Amino acid sequence: MARRRRGQPKGRGRPLRRGSLLAALRLWARRFAILAMVLIAGSLIAIDRIESPVTRELRSGVADLFAPLIEAVSAPFHAAAEWFEAFESNATVRERNAELQREIERLRLALQEMPPLQKENQRLRALANAGRRIEGRHLTATVVSDTGGPYVRSLLVRAGSVDGIRRGMAVINADGFIGRIVEIGRNASRVLLVTDLNSRIPVRLEASGLRALLTGTNGRRMRLTYVPPNVSVSVGALIVTSGHGGVLPPGIPVGRVDSVGRDSILVRPLVNWNRLTFVRIIDYRTPGLVEDLPDDIRRREVGRRAETP
Amino acid sequence: MSEPIQRAVDRAVRRSFPMATAAVASLAGMIAVPAPDYNQIAPAFTLIAVYCWSVWRPDLLPLPGVFLIGLFEDLLRGLPLGLTALLLLAAAGFVQSQRSFVFGRSFTLFWLVFGLLTIVWMAIEWMAMSILLGQLLNPDAAVFRYLLTFGLLPVGAAMLLFVQRSGMQNV
Image (cartoon, rainbow over the protein chains, first blue to last red):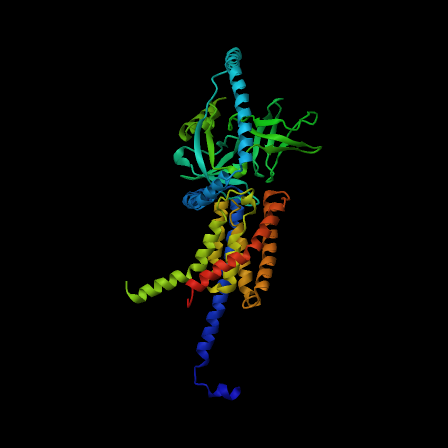
């Protein structure tokens, strides 16, 4: 071994040393890159926790960019699901037909009762000196994707700032309340579902008018909180939005009480999450709220209010 | 375009297949499949792609690229920004450093190691989300997601192997 080394031409060891130095440098660069990426990821998690507008903008931008692509790729799956649904058995169709006939009868009866109820409502509103009911502007949007996974319950919908979508708007369908807009891109927005752990909706029990807060659990059911301890809540009771705070329209059905336990009241949502193709976004604004005004006017208004003794 | 340039472009495109398939896998996990609760238990396709390429062609799956795919997934899924990026980075880094243990061995071992990696990956994800959301989350959906991801590895690996054999010869 020693003889072989002696036999090597002069300078032969230099490139070897340079090579090993390069390899060592590469290894250190790789380690440094990994450390840098870990630090970046940690910082991003921390920045995201404080709901920085930068990360919100970034999310909206990426959603905007990829929503059309995900929508296009998802289209065949939706078509396949519709195709399978078309293959219902005769018995199922007959059963559904009977069910629909019953529903028509029930609605006809309800329709007969409508005009007197409408008149009574108008009379009572006039007596109570209540203003005109605020009708929100509605917009229909397609569902692009359920992106959340096991820990986040959210949807991407194809409507954004160009359609006049704003944060906090209520999202519903024929069954009831779905969630509210939390991120807005130009052409796509994210909806935080009512079942998400971060969702808090002011609600009331339709029958008793009792107000409470509905919180998501990330599971199939939601939890009714801030219910006074001596109040009895029955299973099957309908929960609707209370409109408290002026952000969500009042009276939208959200769910039905599923179980009443010692520590918690659980509510099952009315919406069938597996059949969400279209949603309706409601632009509901309570007049008189400072937040409804355009930014420059709002600033002036807030200034004026601050000046008022 | 001259032939050497054409060849260089062709080679570059072929060499980008691992990153491209990992990005496609990431998007595939977000497709709205109208099946009951699918979105909650959708398999971690990205992890399958990252694992396979980390074992077969780590030279074509740079860690910064894996990190970016993780960031992209966090942004689009609405997850805490940086979490999936960090988890994918850790998974790819670990597999690339230990690949000699599974490379060239039986598929059963390849699958079992993936099973162990996925358990650790999903347990850390569950713990991190529990900490970030401030409460112990129900792990049911994560367990089903794990089973689905583990079960789909042979299908994913077969597809990626097809890509490798048909489009990545001599690159």
